Image 1 (cartoon, helix red, strand yellow):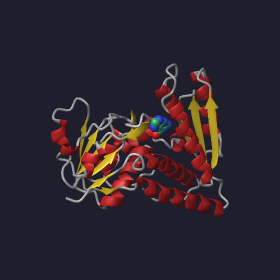
Image 2 (cartoon, protein in one colour):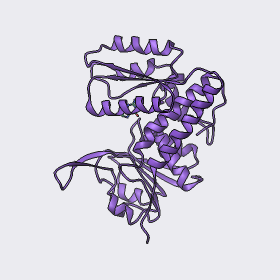
Image 3 (cartoon, protein in one colour):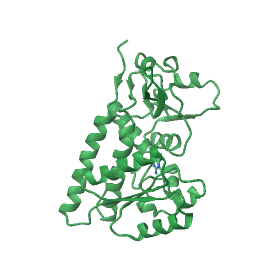
Length: 300
Ligand code: GUN
């Protein structure tokens, strides 16, 4: 059998960013306020610093106003809540992103609840979590949903067309990826199975998947013989492992070389799902700005 077709997340994300930039231009052309994104990082976690920098920079590149708030590790919960209250009230801001994880002395649930749901471009506010959990099949997404699973569903729709009736198996039940991915694929009329580290006969279940979404955070966890021939495999994992040359390299949660021989479509790591996360954050921010401006927002 021929090797799997690679799913070009990097290319798709570039196209999506271009469409967002056009959307920003359209808003500016109507003399409406410039869409604005506020990013908030508490503490100095190196990976979070890289992510937040990329989010703030991309927003500016697409013509949005970008406000990058960096707070010290010792910031109190009350101080963070006060900043969020200011951002909620600020009419120049359409989207607020509080980078996770927060330091242990801050109650993450309390912080996510404090963000105005209309500005919650991460889709983490309980109101938006509940909206996605109760959405009707095919109903429009007129609120923000989490960026990484949104990117996954966009890539799958792009390469497969209709997802209706396909069996999607999700490996991982996180609030960030697994659960919202399952809900987005249900909305797209997939039959969805959510699996996790305690699932019995995980390889056997994975072998039944027409669509396999893997977000478990373990390098090379899913092997080639877990994959149904021709399946679409989306690898959400980003794991840094030691390479043969002594440097570290990035690998996904799927054993890539093995999967390539069996799958029909496969996302590479890097260059698959990764670039979609930031592009979808920009998409969510544009949609929030369009809703605020009273423009009808095309659903994803
Ligand atoms: N940390 C890891 N992924 C994410 C994300 O998508 N959003 C936020 N806010 N924090 C994260």
